Image 1 (cartoon, rainbow, N blue to C red):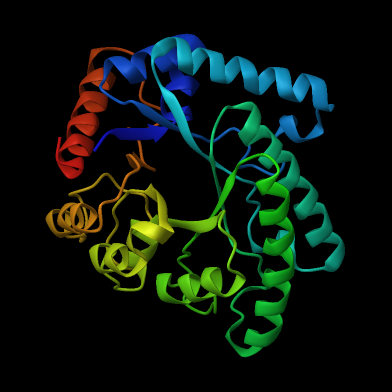
Image 2: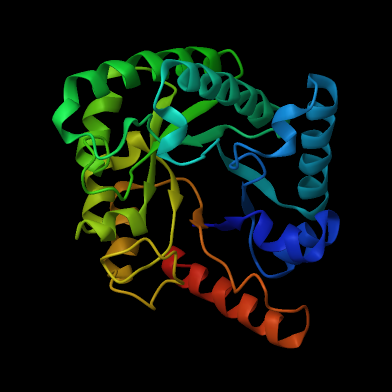
Length: 283
């Protein structure tokens, strides 16, 4: 299994071209593009042509370094961005733009969080949550299909939320029954619930598990720690991915401290993290 990491883990400290080259030098073959995760990102305000050109430059930098942008993360502004119909309409337009961006990157997989019409505690409104999400993701999946993009719904870390745990997310995805609507398994979000990421991978299986967000925590809060610094059983996770025949990369959603200056010490930590990713991937 190949390995990947968030794009900005390298492009933020090193710059675009050097960042992807350094990523490849450290042994990663895949990237998770993060440039459209922030709903306030300037990219969302760009007219279509400069938007396309910006993402195509990103794709070319990755391609020149020998890195494939395998997945990208869609807009996220917290649960407060979903509370009204007007806000949800705005989010759908952002999602559509990000899906086009996914295609401009030459990327197949678009990761997105569920819609939270009642905030991050909606357990008393399951029927409404289902209907709102079903309408939203039917539109998103149908739009994405025209760009050959797969929408990957990510399990969440909020205990009071109906659509959060992998089993509930899987049931929802299956209920819509779109060929290009699958799942992103976030290991840290599983751990917050005391759920085994390995068992979640087995539950989703090869058909529905499309991409990964790999990181660790203390089993209580979503800290995005480096694997092996928290409570997750990584040996069982590796075993589970092999058992189901997972075909994507082992993609990290963690990195060395962002404020660490460039130099030998930072690179040492980056190489240590890359080695951890390879260990979990079974390389």
